Length: 471
Image (cartoon, rainbow, N blue to C red):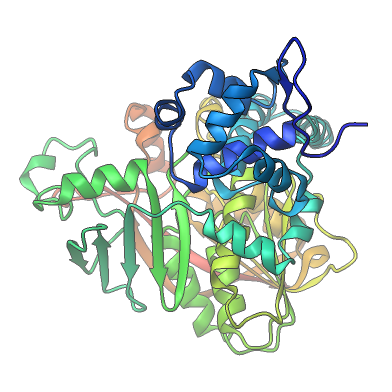
């Protein structure tokens, strides 16, 4: 029977290297912050061979013994220690190993969801679950096993130590009056009274774009900040909390919408009301759920739910970063489409929050849903319609652009949407729409999108937080 981390004795084909050992090699490489090319140079092993060793789908499982010895030495270990590490099931996957696997799986899932946007929900959900489980099994990953490992002190320490060093830190003041971008060299760019988390207008479709100074790119370190923000790991700090994020179509950073929603929830008493459990649906980085669980002293259970694996990973990672003295709180990640697959044994939750996509797919523009993960109002309407089965107190936030869809769901559910806190007018920026002037024209004429021809940001919309309550 195969040992979990075995490197078997050599035969004519070389030594056998198990999947777990290969995963450990990749994990050690990431922890040492070495690229494939750098490890190849350091170990005198070809890049092609290293890629084969790290590829979980590679059929070749025997390699020259000297190759494994060289790789071990280059990673600061030896074959015996490498085998021992691979046998310890607690240390199978570092953060970057999981990021690589999960993004790959997400890229296979995304086309299915987009292509079947108008198929019956039961069919979409079944296909989604089958595809998700198939890809997880093929890589030897179990989400339930990961959840158990997050409970182990040694694994939490290993996992957090495996996080790559961020190439940019973003500090956001509690009252949102300043955002500071800080490079590893400690050079800092601060923006007062920002209108967006990334308050740049350079790529907006305006003939007057060059007439306005960009708070980011017109600064002498703006280009370096832009490069790091768009291609590297970013650490976002707010209050005493911190959130890891990296740009990708699977995961958006906490937006200005999220910070406004948190302020509105504070005004409605969420920070001090006696809630025991909180569910964050469409959680992304986990910002809203983690912030509430960290601030409200009564929260004992937090569930972060999203439909892709990358948000699951970042949400759990960010919880571990912010857990600190909040060890009395249990946190669980949930992966499921719409509001399915949520833990039915603990519903209804005391508190449910959701900051969903709200870009409406207007008639004749369904293809926009195939191109963007933030298009569509399915989650928005699902939360409104399923309200009582999900939680005792529910809050949702959306743009006036999606008001007709929200009102239709409200009527079907027989509930009311009570405005909470302030309405906020924010810039409307979505690159995918700049080429669709016909769609923008409809949003302007039919959905309340506002055009400011003399402003740095040409398009604006209103967002509002609502409590979903009985009629």
